[in-house]
Image (cartoon, rainbow, N blue to C red; front, top):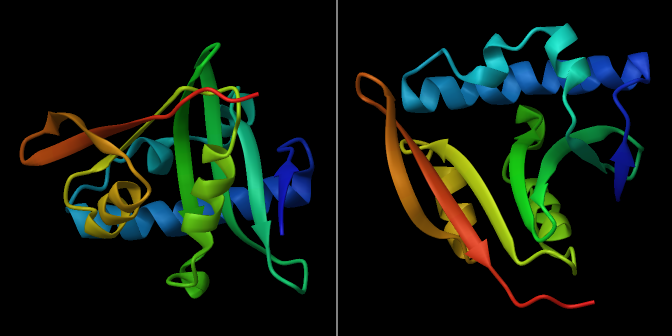
Length: 155
């Protein structure tokens, strides 16, 4: 089940924080770069973000995945975070969370960024219809890929 989550709940905040550290720690290993912004983000900084968060819950009501986004313009959404607890990798949770956000009817364009060497994420995004926009070298040998998906507006 996917439902909106609010970071002002202390227990839920800790679950999201821990998941972020675990999931992005694995991405850091994949791309060979440990200065990924979510890993450097303090708890106070995470608490202050203006993103909308949604969680994927198991049948036993355990938080297993989180997605967040920001609306950058009336019909433009930037997907900020997609994270899955490592003990729930390869269960379709990331895909389900992405599809949930992509089902927003009043959005024309979605964008997302990930490390170029994060092949599982790039493969998922491309399978969901995202296309290459640009690559930016953010540190020597570390490339961040931006992808975008455009869809017709529906109401």
